[in-house]
Image (cartoon, rainbow, N blue to C red; front, side, top):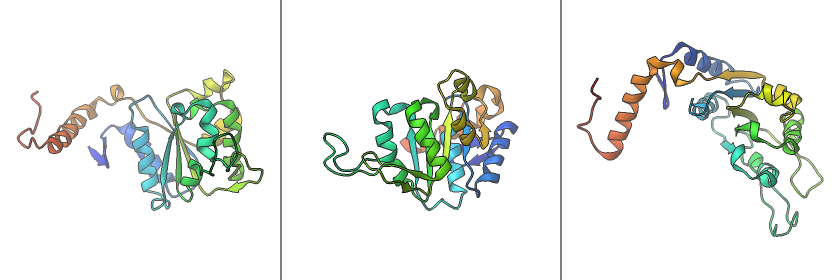
Length: 210
């Protein structure tokens, strides 16, 4: 069993997924990580960032599904002073915060279509427009996205742009569900037992009964 940061990996399918991450970490290509909730997508993205030349720059994670639709563009790209009522000062967005590093768009399938076209521009031209400004801003960020949705099905349903899907899906990493990697259950349980025991100071707790 291989311990990678906080990832416990023994299953061949999970090892294969992480080997892909290792191979592409040094490149600047976009990576799409898919898998059910709880399969370790965020940990896989952190491993990708840590193995990349951008490791000393920020890794900025954005939960696209947790931002209200009317605020997504503002959160990603920031706003200029006076861009809207209450914008007394300019504010940098998350893209600017990730400059030189990695921007992780978690649950990218939740982005509204109006923002998808602007994300496409960021991927294609490496530039974006701050809300309330007309000039464009150059960006040096690596985009990594994750979703539990079937984006191909979302494209067919008209809820996700096909051109954006192809731009995001340059390298696809699929993480298997735990029920399909049952050999990892015991090592995972032991890892969390040790972690929790150390955190609360129960050093006499060492193992589970069968």
